Image (cartoon, one colour):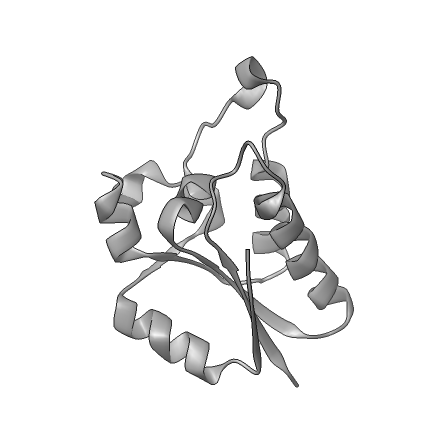
Length: 119
């Protein structure tokens, strides 16, 4: 089985990168392709709990992220990206069961993948 890593580098609002990344990840599932979702840089903002973007005219992506988790797509967040943005593990939505990884672990995951899609 192939393994594809989808890397989320942008925050959840103001562009379509995160939504398209979620769609790609779920599409890979339909194709029976193993995939992981890795959130780095501003992408870690996608994982913050209790988001309410109604005031900026957007819908929350949390339901779609929760669906990824329900379908056993592992969700990872880069520890250094969290620290650089002043975020702690408890700031992340617990329903997603995010695995916090180091840069070294991130590198290992990327090396094990057959393909990487970065958004």
